[in-house]
Length: 205
Image 1 (cartoon, helix red, strand yellow):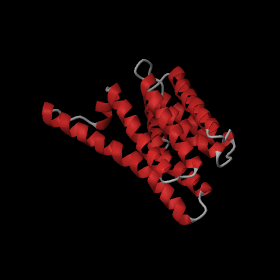
Image 2 (cartoon, rainbow, N blue to C red; image 1 turned 90 degrees about the vertical axis):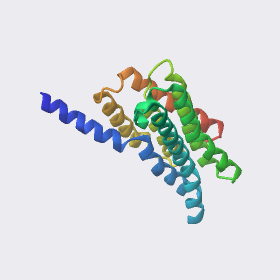
Image 3 (cartoon, rainbow, N blue to C red; image 1 turned 60 degrees about the horizontal axis):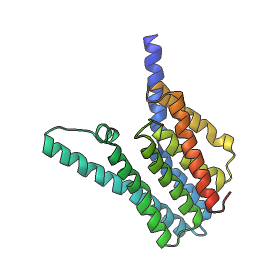
């Protein structure tokens, strides 16, 4: 029984890592950019513009904060352990993840599909960070849902194509003991509702 439980956790951990929003996000952005770009140069331009600030700015900020904490307290902390327990820091990370790249895309005249996808993810990240101040909804599932929705709305993927990925991530987070079913459903609904609302506002729905 113990070995079976350990094996289940191992599979859940691998699944959670593979379907982590930070892993899925580049693929989705590249697919959306490819769909709405007329030439390869535009595809590369919008993909890089959308992704570079979303990864670089939060990473630089996290590393800076962890370094400062280590120097001032003499205690070594990981990014995960520090930011997970700091609601205000998570709010700032959510802003750094989605807002700078959205503004850059807007001012560079990006197609609306890319901007809508970025805003959907940015607002989802911000809202889930706010919600998690009082209730621990699944951050991973909310973000994954908001990231996969452009595949349905812009690339016309059937919803049954992306549903298994959402289900697999939810099951993996549950088996890892990270969330209850209610917390997973809450995260999924936040990602779904925000994405649909944003794309509706942009006229895609």
